[in-house]
Image (cartoon, rainbow, N blue to C red):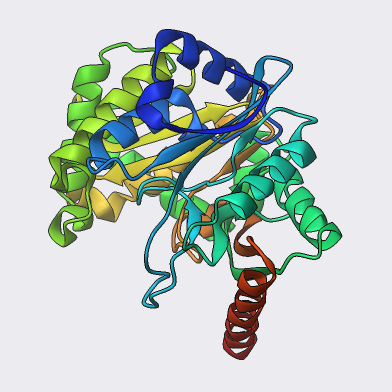
Length: 367
């Protein structure tokens, strides 16, 4: 495949050779993103893109894969009939930053924008969601847009809990959780231990992964997500995606599974995606029958061991802004933004500028 940018049906980039390149890119990416790694994205596409609406933008330099981003072209922008290009994400993916080789950020964005300029079709702008605010790729894109006099604006911003500290796990926990709450958690742990054999498990390989996945899916579905129809096992496609992605990630050492069990029955479970120097808290679940013992918080205390891993310097909670549990334990915050960028000729960019003006005005009024 020649150097430069190309757009492919994602099935054309699913061969063993392509996946090997893809995995190599993930290890040298300017910003890590587990949700775009091969073992995570391909199962999502295979199960969720049944109508083949997603393509991959592939960027090469010196014969080497240096950039990758999934794209789609929706006909509507939220409730408005505004066709546009966007980075594709599914509802269980929480970071949208493309995989780009360190040092190739500017050239990747320049090639991508030039491609959209020449092949805008009916799209009025480029929409990019779930970008880490202040990250190298977001800053480079904004700088390039200014340099090329393109319309550009942040159209949405939120903050979610993040773990990033040089403190030891126990010191961090004591600094985050008031003494009264720590005393209550010790009492809950003791009472829970008195009712049976309480054990914590951590796996970074594929040990009993099929059973673990089945247990997690059942546990998550038994709670409020199951009742609301948003659990992974509420749909066969998302359940299959979960199982396949965990298998692929575990085989590469990119998945950590932790659980708290009582008499060998899981009562709290979590999946972390490992992408040094960062990690992502992908999914968590707990048994609501034991809610009075705070099993989710007890598990999070064990999860703080991430602070002791030399290769991991931060962890994204992937939680909703203002989450009632994790926000009280993880003190740091990560800004997540959505941006719109003008593409095409002068008229199209003028229309984009008007759309951005309306959006940023609404943002200011809501602030």
